[in-house]
Amino acid sequence: MTIFTEKDNVEDITRTVKSWDFVDPERIALLGCSQGGLVAALTSAVNPDMFKSIVLVYPALSIPATAPAQLKRFDADNGNPQDVMGMKLGRDYYAKINGMNILDMTGKYKGNVLIVYGDKDPVTAGGMMDKAADTYTHCTKLMIPGGTHGFPYYEHHEKATKGIIDFILDTMVKTK
Image (cartoon, rainbow, N blue to C red):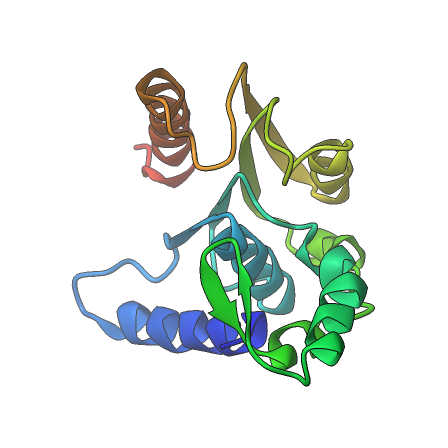
């Protein structure tokens, strides 16, 4: 699994969904959390007309920047899979994103974007969400005060969910 194989999976699933007769292919939104947010940002950048809106929830856009250090871990351990935030990842995961700057790509997507993140999240820290928002033409940010990665507290999750629902209703629902 790499973010590129996940991107390919999202593309395949989206093409299938768009073929269903009960789906309006012009009103498809993509939501991704953490690594899924990185995948959503990449997928929408490579396919700028595939989605009407995207939602990036505590997106781990910083993963590519961690590749050099992670590759050193693999090399020090004879290339064996490594535990990263509870997942066993292979060396290929980081080798394929090493040197990638997702922010060089994100601006290719011109649709509506919502970035939801917490101000106490180390994965989205360092102004990355401001930089990401600046690359998009139509971007709204929803910062959850006290929010950490994954929104483990109910009140943070509830605020994020309300913001996402409001965004989807605003950007996706047809008006007469």
